[in-house]
Amino acid sequence: AEAPQSSGFADEQAEALRAALAASRAEAAAEAAAAQSAAREDLMLAELQHLKAMMAGLARPSAQPQLPPVWGRLEEHLLAQEVQPDLVRQLIESARRDLAASADEAGARQAAEAVRKRMLALFPPPQGKPVSADSKIVHIVGPTGVGKTTTIAKLAADQVLKQRRKVGLITSDTYRIAAIEQLRTYANILDVPVEVVFSPADLTRALHNLREADVIFMDTAGRNFRNEMYVSELNTLIRHQGPSETILVLSLTSKYSDMKAITANFSKFKVDKVLFTKMDETYSYGAMLNLLDEFPIRLSYVTDGQNVPDDIMVADENRIVDVVLEGYSYE
Image (tube, rainbow, N blue to C red; front, side):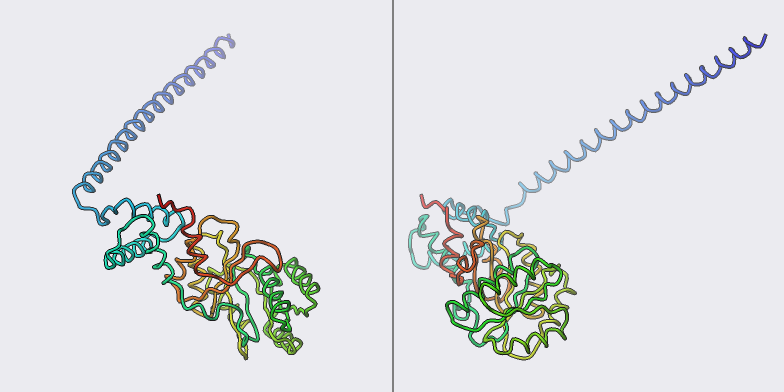
């Protein structure tokens, strides 16, 4: 007598489960249908907005008139070199005026030469690029990964081997033990003294120990120099008495937006010159022109390899402009 009752209860459970499953499936189907309908409506709305934007663009005249082919190809080349669009327009418009005033024909070669002259005009006077003979201390600052320590070795070697000056080295890059050991290795090879500092008080001691040096290169920690607080802390560390200069080291493989932010932060405190590294690791050089256009900076050196002391040279504006225009077709 109990078995049928138990069987009946199980049947009721099974039926309830079936009903629940059917209801769930119906609800899921309804939700899917609603979602598909909403998706179709969103797609239609997006297409209508896109069509509206296209019609509006056709209705109003273009803010930037189409350039003649000769100038259009130059524009494309400079943009590929990552020169900022506003600066590209400025260079081309000025060059077009120059050619119009001279009544020269605007062929590909003439147009490129006119733009070249306008690019050269961005550079400040060439005097004062190398390390100044009057500077007692040269601060090397910049973000991580740009090659500051190797650059210091190249600069120190130039002063020791070519300028015949007594050189001392200081490092405050105590965040990286490898950086300290690397600088010590270079110092041993060049037979120059090196000091490690952890605070402004240590810097006073280090400067006293290196008082016989003609010039002292100071390596600094590469930190987040897009953060103004870190730049302010560094400025406190390197502030001292005596003639000095600060060289900001930037890598040409970095994004220009990062270069701009770093340069802007340092410009609020003290930066005298800019040194570009890794020129051999990129095919675009427009960032140098962009910085010269936006900041009152002076170029110092460029590096194009890891070899110490060879792969460094005083920045040559003619060479920089040449590499920016390299690959441009005059045909």
